[in-house]
Every structure is written in structure tokens, then in C-alpha cells.
Length: 273
Image (cartoon, rainbow, N blue to C red; front, side):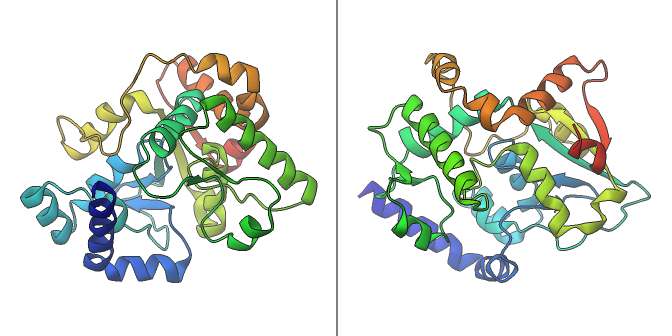
């Protein structure tokens, strides 16, 4: 019954925001840059994405009605990335938040695997790569029977397989590194090189967004609760951070060491980090 309710709710949201759903499909772009009150913010899955989309969604009367009247938070249905980057009030800056790659990866596992209430398993591969999944000689999905170490090892195995076969990155967007997500913006926004990237650690999300939009407390949407599981040991055994998320590790460490509390880089400097 619970699964059916979740499915029907998602279907309802798609119908309510059918215009945005079709536009997303037409552009073939699910993530990118959002414009909120004369500010540009990068939408990176599992790095404050839902909270940022909630703020963007407040510009939609449909979203505000569902949120304030019924308590629904269809953030992923109500918001789509902008199509072009234009100068805003003479400020050519784009804000983004970076999370510790260790925390981010376990957060994906916890939300998409352990807390998965859908009737199907979590796919490590993009939904539109059906042919790859059919031809694959090994499982490309995980379920609650797979522990976190299994999850990490499957990702590593797939990554090596992609490299061996010279495939593109077929990973689900939640598994693509934060660094790669930012690099991919160049294909959607060629003039991103004219903007400065202002990068904050995710721990400052409340403070920065609060100052920008006058919100005393930023609503946490789809965030996973902390637990006492020591996932660091599984990360060390698999070595997945160094193998796949090493750039994220470098960026996050630079943020922690920054006396300013943030990094300000042009696109090329970020690429060369």
C-alpha cells in the first residue's frame, strides 16, 4: 500500500508540472544551473540540491500551493535548469556547494538503497541506458541485501569496465562526482568560462543561502539522517574515494583549509585543480 501511494504521488506531481517534465525531456537535461532571485546556483545531486530547488520552487505558485497547503515538496518536478547564462546585475558569479565525498557517497547508499521504498532496486546506471543493462553480464543494480562495501565495489567494477570498453560515464547522476558535474556544465553553458565559481562547503549552506534569500533556516528536503555506522572502514577497504572521487576530496580539503571559508575560481582553474 505504501509503495502504491508513493508511486501515485509521483505520478500526480508529474501531471501537475507536465510542462516542466516535457521541457526537461526535450532538453535532455535533468540538472544544471538554477536562477534564484538574481543569483546563479549549481544543482549537484546530494550536495544541497533539494534545499536549493526548494528555494527555486517558491517562485512557482503551483509549488507554493502544494507546499503550504498540503505539505508536499515536489522539488524535482517543479524546477528546471536555466537554458542560458546571462550577466546578473554586473555580477558574474555562480555559487555551488561541495560535500565531503565520503559523506556524499554514503548518503546516496542510505537514501537510495537502505531507505528505498520503491518496488525496484536502485540502478547504478542511468535510466536511459536500457540496452547497456540488458547486455551487461553483471548486475547493475543494488538492493538492501548489499552492504555498503558491496555498493562501493560494484561502483569500482563498473567504472573500470567503462574505461576498459571506452564507454562514456553511464553512472546515475547521484554517483557522478561533484567535480565531473561542474565540468559537464561547460557543454550546456559555453560561456561559463566568463563567470567565477564561488565554492562553499556544504556545512555553510544554511548560512550562505540564509544571507542570500533572507531565510532564517533553510528547509532540508530529502536529507538523510545521520547514524552511528562507521562507513569509513568500508571506504578504506574499497579505496573508492582515491579511485573515483579523488578530485572531490582535493576540493573539499582546500575548502576546509581556506581562511576565507570558500574558494573563488574561474572555470579553467577549477578544471585544473
